[in-house]
Length: 66
Figure: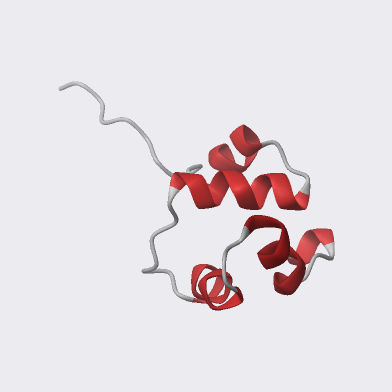
């Protein structure tokens, strides 16, 4: 959100997610982002949800067959 100069209050208003929830998602690495939250946040900040999903999961890899 910081890269797009959008504050949490604006995203909260557009998505219906509380500013507390948005803060938890951005501060606490153990908070679990739900797919519906991801989708709404992506729409609110003008990002393709698929690109955002790819960015967030960039470190995940399939296990290689042995």
